[in-house]
Image (cartoon, rainbow, N blue to C red; front, side, top):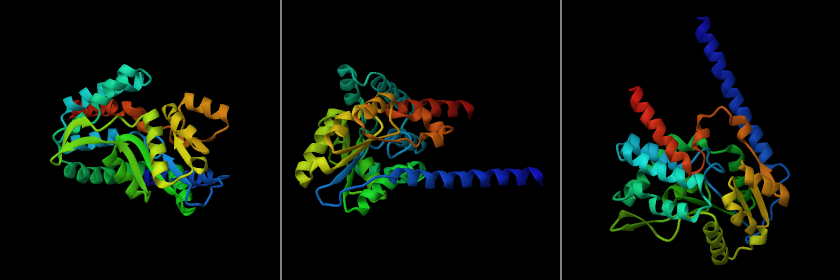
Length: 289
């Protein structure tokens, strides 16, 4: 059957290209990188669009909705709030609103349930969305005996699952308050974003006895310039325009893996606006059904 044979040939070619992309990304990632191999050096990685293609909250919200744990109206409300934050991330009022809304969709859920569901959602929707190039860089740090942390505004429970699955040291993330094993919908402290990320890294470095001048940091967003500026070896990964300009001006390393993924439908799921994209997709899917 010529049609079936043609489809198989196309599938095989696509698979071969995917394998080639992984190999090329890995080679490019570690090319020319020399890392200190002492216990006072470490690496800090942003999560969304740096390690993970797309946004972790997108996958979490979609996975919870598929399990009947989240209503479409909840996703739409949360998505609207997060999209406002994404469009005005430098506006203090938007940051306050985002902080109030962040993780509100898990209010009333148990900590145990989110951890269990998070593990399942990682396997179903995130495991194959890890950027091979970024993972190769993280592994290079590990091979040099360095500790490696994720530092993200995503829920710390989700970030910890991803860090553990990738063999990293641990994760710093936004902490949701819970009482008697259930989330209240409020945060403990602030959304781990911008200057707060840098403060968390600085605090961790002091606690762990790290020399930030010998440490590395990786991010896609200009919002993480404070964290990147803390370390001796900053690197912009899949950078937004403002970070790319800043990195070039400062002579920072730049790694961009997106050219090989231009056709991905997850382009709409960038940054904190990803949950809004999830809501649109879910509503569209319901209309089709």
